[in-house]
Amino acid sequence: MSISKTITALTLDPDNCFERDLRNAHISNVTLCPTATAEQLCATVSREPVDLVLLHFELPDGMNGIELLNEVHKLRPDIRALLLAPHLSDEQFRLAANSPLVQLMETPITSGKWDYYVARMLEGRQPAPKPLKVKYVDELRNDESGRLDAKKAGGVFGLPVTTIAG
Image (cartoon, rainbow, N blue to C red):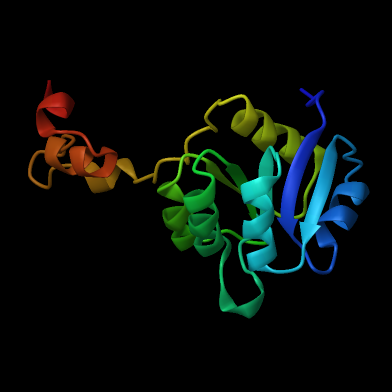
């Protein structure tokens, strides 16, 4: 599925990396509004109509994208953001989990990834949930009987024992 409307994306992109990456991925349905500093981005977001803030997770001057978005959301609580990183860690997912308006995407940018995340953000659809941690069935067995242990299984899936045993 391709995004048909042109999207206006505000970026903190002093080196114009996003423009190059989007061009290389043949993505033409985005108008970039680059800013050179975090202060300039915050000033722009408060006065300009934008659909999306597009940031790298790691930013210049030791700030990260989540910290900058916290400042942006004070000015525009409704603004959606896409944070990019070459390799996303569990810690980065935890930081982003507190905001339903933030999506994380691993670089490089591709047209498929772009369409997937932007469609979900702008159309309000939720992304697929992060996969559950998989445990080997043997680790969930009761040591004495060999049957599955409801308490262990409940702990893995975050469910009460009564739900598992019922």
